[in-house]
Every structure is written in structure tokens, then in C-alpha cells.
Length: 114
Length: 115
Image 1 (cartoon, rainbow over the protein chains, first blue to last red):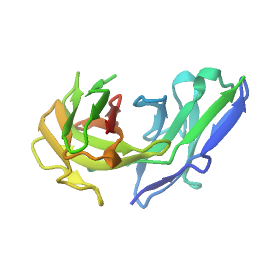
Image 2 (image 1 turned 135 degrees about the vertical axis):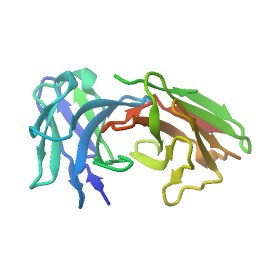
Image 3 (image 1 turned 90 degrees about the horizontal axis):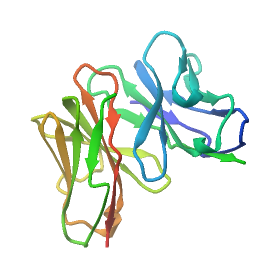
């Protein structure tokens, strides 16, 4: 079975400051890793994904994440945040075969302060 | 990118009635669709996985008779909440995956309020 841990439920950060949202996972098999953003009362938008290859993955809106297999982590970073980045961020894993069902972390609320 | 459309986006129904939520893949054939439930300020909990033409596989603790899932075609899956009660009020999200794809695409979600 797979599990995802997002230790920070809320992260406040000032505008134009860097931010890191942490994600750790547990799995006995290979997984794919994803970061999604959710705005209020909306569905999920994919920020980036790691399937294979380079461990540094770049996504939309200036976000990037690094896959670290030894630490089973997939932390999300952005060098300079904007007010519009205020949202809920979810880390997710899926199996690499079978149904590919997603298991989500509990989410991190990023609040960008002016 | 692939588009998944969910309808309705919001629905209010009376306690004891049933409500149907549709999930459509607009520009691809979805061999697998997933239904999630999200409580306020919480994560998405997988309810069930459905493959076109076969019965849905429900996660532990999800009542099959209460949450009826139908995946009759490669572009449409429906979730019917039967005999709805206020505790069924929640945000329901579907996602769809095409065969051979590693990625699932998510609908916009449906806010269900049972009064």
C-alpha cells in the first residue's frame, strides 16, 4: 500500500519570498508522483509530475519539485511566490501499473501575505 | 490537455432524495474513472474505481448501495447518491484515465448540499 504525508497543514509566506512545501511518501513498489493545486470550490490542476528520468521536475507557474528516492520525498518549491499562489496544494502518488489509482496527502494550505 | 467535465457543479437536494452526478471525458476515451469525496479542508478520499463496462471497485468503508457508480461508456461515468442525508453533503470529484496513460485528469468537482 502507498501513503503520502504532508507535514505542514498551513504555510504562510510573504509575497516574493521563496517557499517549500514538503511531501514524503511510503510505498513498497515504484510510484509516480504528482503535485496538484486546488482553488476554492474547484477541481485539481496538475502542477507537475515525476514519472522517471531527471529527478528535478519543472512545472507550471514557476513551480519545481525534486524527487529524492533515498529520502522518499518530493518537495515542491517556488523561488518567489505571488498572492495568486494562495491555494491548497496536494501531493499524490500512483502505482506504475494496474489501475493507477491516486493516493493523496492531506494537503498544505499556502497563504501568501502582502 | 485532456478535459474532464463534471455536472452539475453545485446541487442542493432534499433529504431522502437521490442525486446523480455526471463525469465526462470530452476529448479522450476513459477506460478508468475514479470518484473521490472531499470534506471541508481535508484531502481527497478515493471512493471507487470504475472500468468501462464492468462493476465499480469500492474502497473499504464506502457503501455500494448508497453510492451507485455506472461507467456505461468510454466517455461517461455517473455517481448516484441514493436516499441522500445531510451527512452526505460534500465535494465530489471525478477523474478519468485513458488506457496506457500514466496520468488521470480531474473534473471541476460537484458541491452537494443535502437539506
